Figure 1: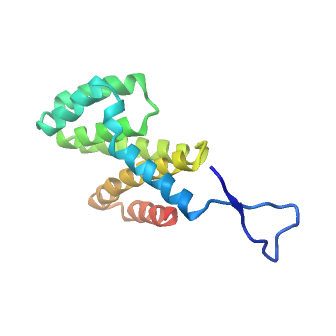
Figure 2: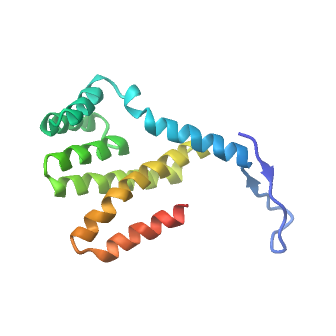
Length: 159
């Protein structure tokens, strides 16, 4: 990825270089990150596909079992945690769903700060945003207004 150097401000030392991503590069990276989110299931294997089909067929128990198997092999995958949360919601296990969304958000936060590229970082931020979108109303429903507001603020800061 190319970059250009930002203009020097009054408070910058002459040795400090500030790389800046061009608008075109940012839009391209964001587009790739969005496509990766949308096509996630296509590269996750047969068991993941079965879990998604089970959710579509209103069989959350089957999806929970399938996603739990995947999670045992990939415990640091924020997408699997998020999908397991969806399955748990469908199975009326709100506490388990909230727990997996929290894990998904924590993993996405970590991935965003350690990502090797802008595209990977944007993907992690999108994963986190998806988890936050569901966690906020859960916190509101539990009367945890401060937690909901903190998540909303975090989402605004990421913009």
